[in-house]
Amino acid sequence: MLEANLASIERRIEAAATSAGRDPSEITLIAVTKTVPIDRIQEAYDLGLRHFGESRLQEALPKIEALPDDITWHFIGKLQSNKAKKAAQHFPIIHTLENAAQVREIDKAGRPVDGLLELNIANESQKSGISTESVDDLLQCVIQSLHVRYRGLMTIGPNLSDPEQMRPYFKRLRELGERVGADWLSMGMSADFDVAIQEGATHIRVGSALFGERH
Ligand SMILES: *Cc1c(COP(=O)(O)O)cnc(C)c1O
Image (cartoon, rainbow, N blue to C red; front, side, top):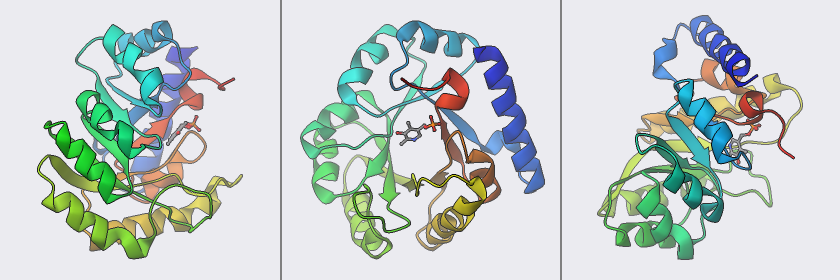
């Protein structure tokens, strides 16, 4: 099943990229492994995947420990600043920067970390991420940090049933990214990564389309 799912995801990536005149190899597929047990992640690794995303530190640590060390682990969950130093010790890429305290704690780990600013692109209450107006301040903070390398922007976006309705939000993230020199745009999940790729995603985060529904 995993193999067929991956083949189908790869076809979708290829079709979306081609339709937008992009090269599919520009797009990094991050396999989101929250709730997925180690043996299933190993299967995905054996199929050639090397980028994996986790959203909870406690759940991720044993997996990182058990799995091959040529995996690139992406932190994609809410990151409390009291856990940020520890996250930086294990994740070379953190997608969910949203305040200065986190950035200071990450710095204390003393390791290089690629950082993305998480945007609450639809200004939804209760959603994580910063508003468009706060981008410049947080960006300054990242640029002045010792170890966090600014890479770009990330968003989850509203939970809409029709992927086409996500297009304006992905477009908004891309336009903001152009203004603030983002090389990476982390946007698009199982239901809508095709649209995200058409709008410029460089990193897509895919869980259920690969591993099946989470329970
Ligand atoms: C769970 C999760 C995903 C993957 O969601 P699917 O719809 O299962 O592909 C992507 N990004 C974040 C931040 C997540 O928490």
